[in-house]
Image 1 (tube, rainbow, N blue to C red):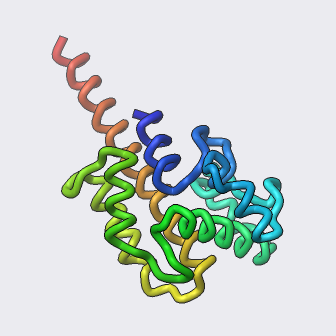
Image 2 (image 1 turned 60 degrees about the vertical axis):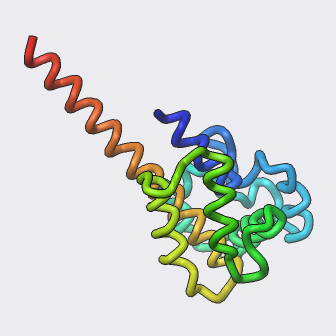
Length: 161
């Protein structure tokens, strides 16, 4: 299940294929977007930074903006965002195509919630980082709920024996 969780993050949010990886670094346009935004790989947050809210502890607002701008560049090159506007249908379609998550499934509903929570933000870099953060944290919550349910089920089976 953890690999599926990471896969969703990787494929949709254009993040790394490993939890410690930098946001977006497995995308074919990663280096292009770093260069276009004058950002180094060292400036990019990891998925762990997002999950542990280390990115919000950053005293450097410029680093937050840099991460958001690189993510916006990646989303724009993916064709799901133009400047500060999402193409919501393209986001959903791309998400379904890359993850096989279908409408009605928890993760699809989480994506919709994240789109709705962030769509009114007007600054493109902030909006991109907020969407990415929302999706990553939603996937983590869903993963932990499933993990807990699986553990409870295992515990029930042990107590029945």
